[in-house]
Structure formats: structure tokens, C-alpha cells
Length: 505
Ligand code: ATP
Image (cartoon, rainbow, N blue to C red; front, side, top):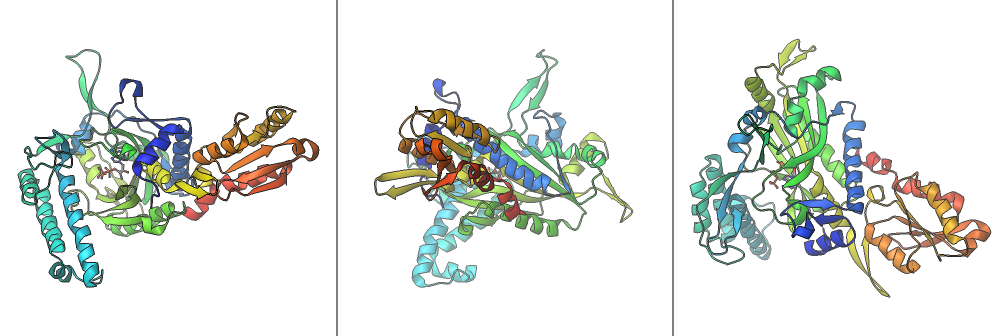
């Protein structure tokens, strides 16, 4: 669980050069963020961990890097033009905008949380049936009823009913406390732009709202050129854009963000087995980071998208509670079939073992890089009480740390900087190293703790005599005197990405 609240994490990210609000000198652009010098290193390390474990460690997965712009028919075929929208609702008094579905889902959650307390008091087992729980708790009953009504309304895309449910359950605006709502309207989340210089001959384009379609339209190109046999996967990391209605909670919900997606193509009929396998593989990847297993859970989608026959999220216990981090979806043959229909080109695979052509079924694993960044930040950032005050430490898995090692001369004279720079120039081959001679050694240690540097190497006068240095470990703060010739091996071992990959596979 995150130790610190979201506001502390946001401030730390800004103060230490991890994440800045976009165009800050112009008072920010809502829900768009820039990654700073240490943020970009951490982000790249997360990408490396994902890419290596998915592509390098799986013989049957290859990567691509598709363009952000795609032919506009792509989005017609995928269903995004007609139905990639959110139901929005405004509070007339505060003028604050909400997603109607989220308001209802949060209300269900509230009822459930209240119910849990009632059930605990009455000693009702968590494994008791819904009927038993509903009998014992009025709030549980309310949650079940609202959930059932909500699913019915969602399946029928009956947004009028959303408003009725919001009114019936007396859901109030968190700002004004008022229950004075507008009607629910559908709002398409895609950003539109123009291709071509002349207004009259230009074509409407969209910034891609997901990276997946770049994989689907390239299915045959990739399968043929890389000579892949079903089952196989195509992975991609790239930007996606969504005009989110409610864009709060820092980098959890952004308008421009990055996804790490993998589409796994399988024989029709085998998809649910693969769905289970991918759930297991992805959970292992998350746990390899040393996360407390209680902070990760699967969440089964109550309302499935029309093209899916199974869908679950991996949720993480963020500072604002359990929220989606990654989606694992069984998308059937929907996307390839739609592109086949709209393009008039066959997107089939000849299975030589079955002697048969078919449109493969697809399991998708899709994780937001920025959400993963927030998760890593929120589980690593800690405030520790020490005898001489509080220490802020970013206890990142060493392989993800932006700076792998810092080299610090004790003083800025007597040949210590020269010796320290010699060591620094050796260590920079391991990964990003850092050299700093300003401020007291204590201050420099604290700064390195705050950006998550696993080791600090201090060069002092004794170093010049006997070629030994002090190595300080971030988490334990233990200091040890070792020979310079040992430093490289110790640091290399600790920050090696293979430590993670071996646990993840
Ligand atoms: P949510 O329900 O939170 O809007 P979603 O179900 O629409 O998410 P998907 O379309 O399944 O999300 O996208 C896959 C992943 O991309 C999500 O699990 C999330 O990690 C990430 N993601 C989606 N939207 C955003 C966003 N606006 N900002 C940052 N990451 C996002």
C-alpha cells in the first residue's frame, strides 16, 4: 500500500525532477505532464523491464512501432468513431463535470464499504452468499440492486436511466454537495485533427486513442515477415490520446499517455485458456518488483465490451484506493474481422496443422506506462523517522533507479575530486552514474535517497593512500569500507535488470 498520500507524491515528483505539469509557466495544461531528468530515466527503465520480459524473454512475441496517425477508416472499423465515448454529466451549481458511470460505480463502492463494516460487526463470513449478506446488511442489498440496475442500463446504453439512478440514490456533487444535475450526454474521447494543408481537401484524422489498432492492421505484415506461427504475440509501446472528461489524480488519468500493449493471436476456441495463462504471467511480472501481494488484485469486468468474451483488470492499491493498472481482455476475432470487412482485405492465418484458414482470436494485455510509474513511485516513496529527523527515501527496485550509483568526493580539494572522477568514469558503463561535489556529504546522501540511488561511493583522504572507498547502501544506510576494485562488481550485480527478469519469467 502507498505509504504517503497522492499530494506528497505529486510534490516529490516535481521537487526532485520526476514529473512537471505541462507548460507550467502558462499555468499548466490540464491532465498533461512532462517527465523531468530523473522521471525519464525511471520511465525508460520501466519500459525496458516490460519490453525485455515480453519480447526478449518470449520466443513467440515480437515488437513493432506503429505510427500515431492511422487511416481514418481504422477508427470506424474498430468502433471508436461510433462508441468510444463516455457519458458525461454536469452539476448545475458547481459547474463541475463528472462521468456518470463513475459516479454510479463509486456509489456502489460506498455501499459495499459501509456494508463491510456491518457484516464484520455481525460476524458474517466474507465467503457467505450474496443473499445472506444482503439479508444481514441493508447497504449490501442496496449495492447489489444498484449494480444490477446499472449493468442493465449500461448494456442497453440507456443514459437517461443513469441520471435516474444518480437521482434515486441521491448522489451529490463533491464540491457543491448539490444534487442538481444536467442530463447525461455522450462525449467522444478521440482528438480530431486534419491531414493536408488545404481546408477543403484535408482529411479528418484522429490521434490514436489506443496503440492496439496499429498492431491489428499490421497483423499479416508482421506474421509473414517474422514467419510467426499461431499462437504468437505482437508487442508495442507508444503514445495514446484521450480527451478524458474527468482528468484528475495526477498521471493516473492523462489526456496524453503511453501504453505498453501486447496482442496475442490464438486458435479460435483456445482463447479462454490463454486468457488464464496471460493473467498468471502478467501477475508474476508485477510481483517480481517485490510488491506486497495484498496490493494487487484481479477485478472482473461486470459489463463486458460487446466484442469481449472475458475481461479482467489488474488493480493496484494506489494512494486513492484500488484502481485499474492493467487490462487483460479476450477480444475474440472482433478487431481483425472488422478490419477485414472495412478494408476488403483478408486478415486470415493458414494453420498448417489444422489445414485450415481462420481469423485468429486475440488476448490483449494492456498496461499504462504512466500508471505503472505512479504505482512504482507510490510504493517506493517513504518517510522514515530517524534519530536526527525524517529521511525521505525512494526505495525503488535498484534495476529501475534513475541513477544507479553516485560518486562523491568528501571535500572539493586535495585531489579527491580527481580520484572520484576517475571512479565515476569507470562506473558510468554500468548505467547512469552521478558525480557531485557540492554540499555536505550528509546532504548529498539525502538527495540521492530521495531520487532512489541504490549506492553512494564516497572518496576521502584514505582513498588516496590505500585505494579504498566507503560504499553506502540506500535502504539500510549501512556504510562499508571496500577496495575500489570491488565497487563495479557490487553495483553491477545489484542494478542488473536480469534480477527482475529472472523473477518475472
Ligand atoms: P479506465 O477505466 O481507467 O478509463 P480503460 O479501461 O479505459 O481505463 P484501457 O482502454 O483498457 O483503459 O487501456 C489500457 C490501460 O491504459 C489502462 O489499464 C491504463 O493503465 C492505461 N490508461 C487508459 N487510459 C489512461 C489515461 N487517461 N491516462 C493514463 N493511463 C491510461
